[in-house]
Length: 286
Image (cartoon, rainbow, N blue to C red; front, side, top):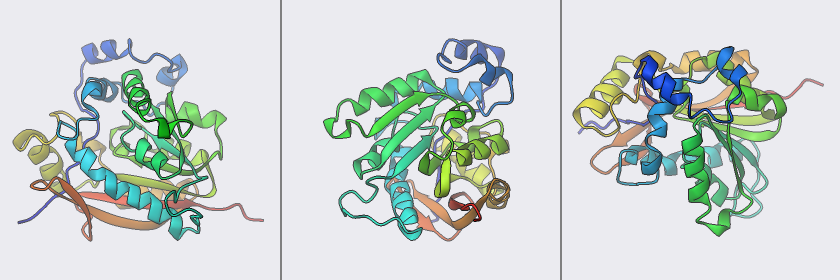
């Protein structure tokens, strides 16, 4: 049986009523971030904010995203090891590593990174999801001091956090931002020279439209309807070009598969539907 990878992300619903509703949610987001050039898709933020109470339900509407977690934690851990990060304590391989989780949602990826030693800052435009992330983290005393959540946009956050992080993770978010060039520039601005950026997303192919939207949202209802807009998907070549533009060299691109019968994700050679990309910020020339 052919298996495909279907991941959750943001919405494509449109209309003034959604934007008006979101105006009540933007909270700490600066007015300037909405008036000027911005990565924020207001409708997407609304769509995912409504899922805040279901974020940590492993059998719920975000179960596919939960199934991706083991794979993407491995992706970051192995990627950093391959760039020379040495783990002094095997139980905490990311100890001493500062990680920025962009579009962290309710903290689903941030928490396991913190549990293996990383000092994690998660940022998201949704006040509801940041509240969910904080609430869930508060239930585990082992996470005390390892997680920091901020409601903000990456372009605003990057201004006062230049070259502050060893790694940036942008998982299931790039296909939902309004300005991909600004998004990557801002992410990379926060990276130290030699730091890594890890991205997982949909490819922009016919197969990704069939699997990620038609099958996942409308036929099998694996994720909420209206979560994805195929027009916002990005090919590996396009992503590489943007990363190169802002000083990063791609290290690895690998396809991701999904088995809906087992609700499991796995690495595969084909990048036709989903893929992960690891790139490293070039060090300054002396």
